[in-house]
Amino acid sequence: MKLVAGNSNRALAEAISGYLKVPLSACLVRRFADQEIFVEIQENIRGEDLFIIQSTSYPANDNLMELLILIDAARRSSARRITAVVPYFGYARQDRKTSARTPISAKLVANLITRAGADRVLTLDLHAGQIQGFFDIPTDNLFSVPVMVRDIEDHNDIGNAMVISPDVGGVVRARLLASRIDAPLAIVDKRRERPGESEVMNIIGDVEGRDCILFDDIVDSGGTLCNAAEVLHERGAKSVRAYITHGVLSGGAVARVAASRLRELVITDSIEPNAAVLASPNIRVLTIAPLIGEAISRTAHEKSVSSLFD
Ligand code: R5P
Image (cartoon, rainbow, N blue to C red; front, side):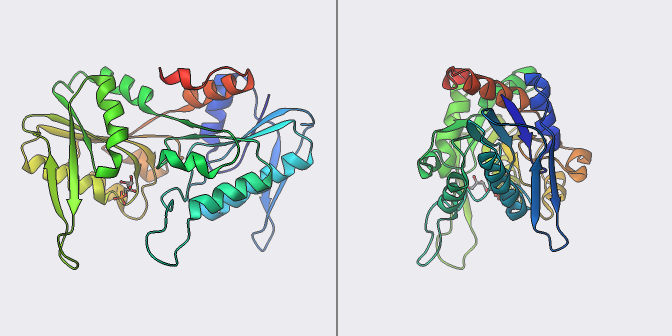
């Protein structure tokens, strides 16, 4: 097996390499003056089982292009099998037509990765499980749940836990966590009664006196979480934390989270945390390197990946 890393999340790639005890293959990724990307894999990969690690996070288009060019270089260098390891799969939220004459960009990105020459894809907490079907190559969608459960169990101040899905679309994901920690489930139901009127938030479930755990795949502007934390407190929640896989945290999200009623936001390193995230008083980062490393090892040795989540 050989590992190659793009530039989107070197720290995670190095941690995965440490877990597997396989060094990252020498690979040059640089820009021409006009910002075109050039890559050169600087060791022989002919006949190798190659894993290319690259999240398509901010700047999404540059990191996606870098991934595609790395796959192309690997294919032209006769790697035996190429797995695109994409811990954060950007564009996933554009997975359906939301109105007339709009694209399905998640499908386009899946096509690009496949046509570039990937044989498999390994990713984490896809925005919607059905996105696996956008790829006509084997796609393993890992879950961060075991990592989150371990952390929740280590925090014995979360006594009277209740898992909260921040929207109706996330119920299946939240139910999985609730069943793993043996906690009840509540749902935030956001709706705009009439166009132009502000959104009304209802909570389906009784959160009074509960240590609430909001569970979701993405925190972007932080608006969904901060508003939910406010409403949960209004309904009598004792504390509100959030466990979110992908910390997109764009714009003023870090400041918004710091000023919110969230006791803590726990994210993973699927996207490399920037300095503001690392300095934040109420954001903590868990690593998913061992989980991804183990899934890579099992893929290379043709062992079950799904049994990681039994
Ligand atoms: C939406 O369906 C996602 O699961 C997240 O809830 C959403 O992307 C969060 O966005 P924001 O942090 O901007 O509210």
